[in-house]
Length: 232
Image 1 (cartoon, rainbow, N blue to C red):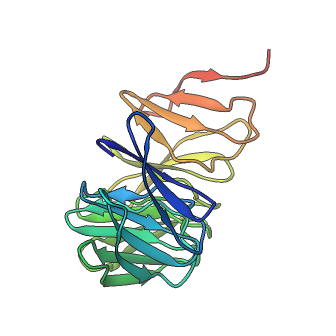
Image 2: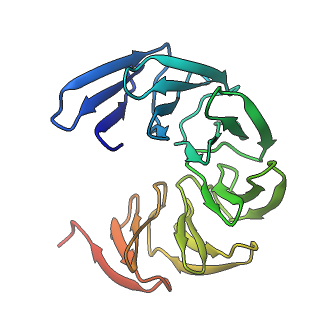
């Protein structure tokens, strides 16, 4: 986060360290902080399992505001243009004014939300525990589309030139175009996908759970470029 390292922790605290590792401040509440916070460069937006989203002064660690999000939150928020977007573990998704913590709108989806949304062309894309990929209007939260992905979608999607790729618990990677049309990119030979998909240049990097290929890199068309395995 620029000149700071912001570290959430299950011990009910968020820690800020400078780039030399010196502790600058500690922010402590009554719930674990599982998610990496978001920031606008002046404030930190930290969700907790105690249902709260906290606005924290980045420099001092002082609380600016708190907002009750009705259920535990383990998803990383997205900050964009003065608004914090985040979902909770029972399927409520919120847009929150970053200045004062006021809820601007909320929308209910079918399952718990575990990851940060992707914002593209004024729409928010995120998966849920019921196995749907949801598309909402960023302006007012209107549900544009909810697409059955076949199994839980717990990790964040990755923005590619042709759309947004998501991984599923049964090991499928699917590309969703911005209008909601979908096409498969690949299916793992074994394993599940729980973590975020990551784009690194011309590669889509996938971390697979209980797979013979736990780390896989694909080209942007879904073809395997390389993989890492601990098996000989």
